[in-house]
Picture 1 (cartoon, rainbow, N blue to C red):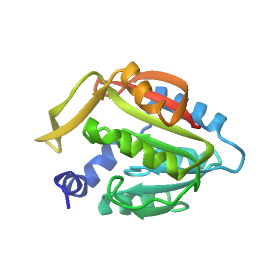
Picture 2 (picture 1 turned 135 degrees about the vertical axis):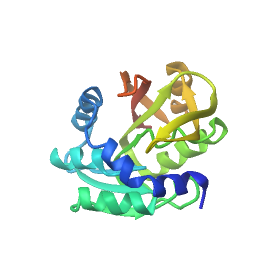
Picture 3 (picture 1 turned 180 degrees about the vertical axis):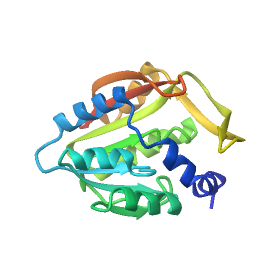
Picture 4 (picture 1 turned 120 degrees about the horizontal axis):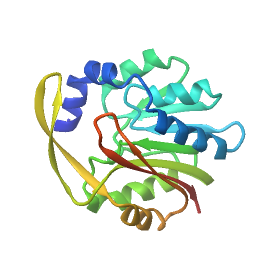
Length: 201
């Protein structure tokens, strides 16, 4: 088990408490994502955490499944969205089904990967999504990759993050996807994020 997995398992309850409310700006972006999906879509939340985004999708009549590498997070997500199916999966290491999903969202679940690995991750997502499927991805805005000190449960820990500009992220995605929409939104701690909605080509 990686240090990151251990952290998410250890702080799952605290994460759940602090990630109950959907950011209003991101909710609008999710509504846009929903509007582009084909009828009767099945959507995967990749790195689903406590299932908050899945719950919103389900409330908007979207069938959802969730993958996460934290067993404790999945336990919480099952309670928050009992109607959904969940799988304990590592984005980098585990096999994913081929062309199963009409849509995939990765809301800040890929920002802990080093930049030299992200193209392989995007290729894996491309294989998992159906033809013309819709992919939504959200990263921290900025440049470079480095550790940041963050506070969880009054404890300061260091965590690795990769930061992207719109140009850099668009260039990476366009190897496998057509970028349909680009958004920026501000998180609750004042951080800026880039969100892109893409279509498999």
